[in-house]
Structure formats: structure tokens, C-alpha cells
Image (cartoon, rainbow, N blue to C red; front, side, top):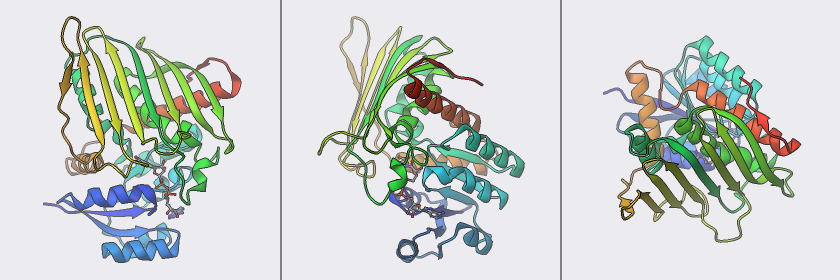
Length: 339
Ligand SMILES: NC(=O)c1ccc[n+]([C@@H]2O[C@H](COP(=O)([O-])OP(=O)(O)OC[C@H]3O[C@@H](n4cnc5c(N)ncnc54)[C@H](O)[C@@H]3O)[C@@H](O)[C@H]2O)c1
């Protein structure tokens, strides 16, 4: 069995979920890490027993055995580092959001195409318990034709040394960091978005950290996505999905801890409602969605096929949609999505 050599670039908050996930995979190991903060780079490398660098390109030059670069960098750096890693011939798994702007997304798409390397945006919700089941139910025809949906993702302000996250152009606050999960997942279920109308307010960070996006899909589905980074102390990191179809409506509730790394003891429930029947509570399989996501990407590489669960074109379209949500908030008008 091939053991994939993974270089993790950026060793902040979400890298912890990925290190834990990689440790569960028999066919993967962390080959090296790169982190710009020297103390964090050293501490992480020593803890994992692997070489560490403060510069990603040094890692790429010195660790030619690396198969996959896993980018856990601030969002505004994604496009640049996707291009860098692709130019070294590495497969790239990059944290969401794909990029901040459509121009950055297009540059990343072009770089991946030029280098002909496998690429996937780490849209973990597509692999998440409950969300995965909703997609399976839809594909199996259990929900029937869809017409309405509501998604929510709210938490306390996520604060550590991540000032980039609350810079409107570098992290974009909740509208980019949180809502992108649901925008991506809704595109997965409903296809491309047609137009958006946003109700949102900025807070002291100048980011849209309280957002309601009303989205009309080309398929006819109408959806509302809510996100907030301003819940009061003690409000758990919460996700919610309600999808209504002609045959059944499905409701998913998920509550973690302060942040998404705190999933031990998370509360998860999937309920299905059908006309004239008692609601069904479906048992949800408990597994690590980050491990499932990485395992899927490695399997695609091993089998020589491009990832189909999340494609790079879908990732580009998600950034188009999030940008339209922002434009609608800025202008107070309905924004059509241009492709
Ligand atoms: N999938 C999820 O559930 C999830 C959850 C949280 C964050 N994210 C995404 O993951 C990405 C990282 O978020 P985070 O919360 O871990 O941020 P973070 O700020 O905690 O970590 C980023 C790390 O990258 C390092 N870094 C910055 N510039 C660098 C460079 N040029 N080279 C090497 N290292 C560099 C920083 O020092 C920091 O340690 C973001 O895009 C975010 O949206 C995803």
C-alpha cells in the first residue's frame, strides 16, 4: 500500500484537525510542515517528529518525496500557494474558502490546469455526517423535487492570533469564512445559483459578521443561508440545515464546542418528516469528516481520477456566489451571478 507523504503548510487552528485526521489514515503520513512563525513551526515539527520549515518553498525544494500539499493558510494566501505547490508538481488539498476573489480563484484554476496536478478544495461539509446523508437521500429520490431550504452556521467570535480573519479583504469574517460552507453545500444539492439578495450588517471589524443571504437557484430552489460570528458567550459552534422536497423534508442539527475542533460530545441529529407519518430520526454514523475528506482525495489520486465530490470549477463558482452575496449586501440590490 502506498503511504502518501503530506506536507502541511500553515500550522494554526485548523491544522490540528488535519493532523488528527492524517494520524487515522494508514496510507498517509505528515512528511514535513511549513509555518511562518518559527516557534510554532519548530514545536509542530518536533511534536510530529518531522522536518519543519518557516518557508513553504524551502520545504518543497528540500522534501521532493512529498506527494500532497495540504494548505491550512489564511484565505488571502490560498491562490498564491496553490500555484506554488502546483508548480512543484504536487497534488493540492486547500482549505476553504478557495480564495477571496474571483480573479484569485481563476488564477488558481489556471495554475492547476497548467501543472496538471490533482486539486480539491477542502469543503469538509460535503463529507460531514448528516450532510452526507442528505445528499445521498436526494440522489436516491427520497426527498423528491426540492423547493425550499434554510441553512445556518453561527458561533461566538473565533479569536486567537488570526487577525487576518477579521480583515474584510483577507478573511472576510463570517460571510466568507462560515457562509462559504453552506454556499458550497447548497451548490452541491441545488446546482448553480442564479441570483442573490442579502441582508447583512457589519460589526466593529468592518466585516459582514451577521448575514442572511437569500439565494435563487437556476433549478428553481429558493434558499436562505444565515451566518454569524457574534453569538454571545457559551453559544456553541452550531450548524443547521432544513431541506424541503415534495416527498420529504429533512432537518439536521449539529452543535460542537467553542470552535469546530471541539467535536467530542457534539450533538448531531437528522430528522425526516413525511406527510401522514411520524418523524423518523435517522442514526448518524460517527466518524472524523476531515479524515474522510483526506481519504477521498488520496483515493482519487491513487486511482488517477479527478475528485468529483468537490470539483475545482464548483469551487470557482462558490467564490462567484459569495462575492455576489457581498455585492448585494454592499448595494442593497438583487445581484445576478455572471458566468
Ligand atoms: N474546514 C474547516 O472546518 C475550517 C475551520 C477553520 C478554518 N478553516 C480555514 O483554514 C484556513 C486557516 O484557518 P485557521 O483558523 O487555521 O487560521 P490560523 O490563523 O489559526 O492559522 C494559519 C496559520 O498559517 C500561518 N501562516 C501564515 N502565513 C504563512 C506563510 N506564508 N507560510 C506558512 N505559514 C503561514 C500562520 O502563522 C498560522 O499559524 C482558512 O482559510 C480558514 O478559512 C477551515
